[in-house]
Length: 254
Image 1: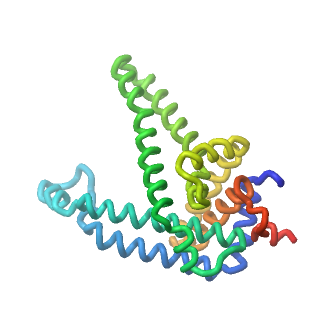
Image 2 (image 1 turned 120 degrees about the vertical axis):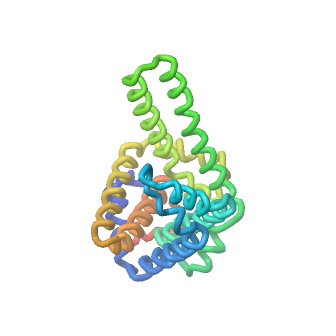
Image 3 (image 1 turned 90 degrees about the horizontal axis):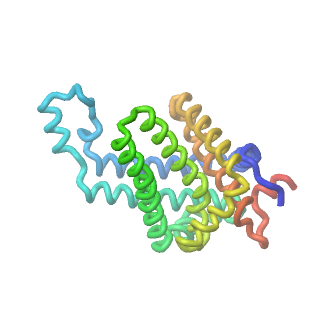
């Protein structure tokens, strides 16, 4: 199998997108609208009207009252994880030429075990990132050096980014039925030859998302599905291409 590259992943993601652009735009638009409505219901409008240090005492008090409850935040996190499971699964099926309808995507990928593993992974990664910065803060307090703090923070951020790169395939591996430990181990193993390409992939994805924002935000309806499809292509060719299926990425070359 040829080694996948970031440029080839986006090229094939674009070709797959063009095959059924209206469907892909519709799916992502539908999920986005559902998330927006749920966020609007759960997050009071006043909690989003933050003016920083220019707020009056009355505005500060109103903000405290409008702050969303823990339950609202928890429900929103659950809905967002389910949305990610669905969109990752949808693009994975499209790339593998296995898409048979939104209902099947939901029943196939939105499972309790996958949700729990994704939640644990998200919490674990966040705690690991926080743990990296704890010794940095402590050492900065000991040395009382601004330059040391700057250097240490840069190192900390770079290390967190490196961890994120090595975990690039975890969500897809969880969707493919691997358990939590195997997903982390396999992602760490399979990303080793692709570190540079993953960095390039992220840079291209950020550039595309920014370009979509510039086109009156409507451009995101095109760029976001392409990014998801390209990421599914990258994963499928680097990690888990099924032997008994002809992926859409190969069908395009035939």
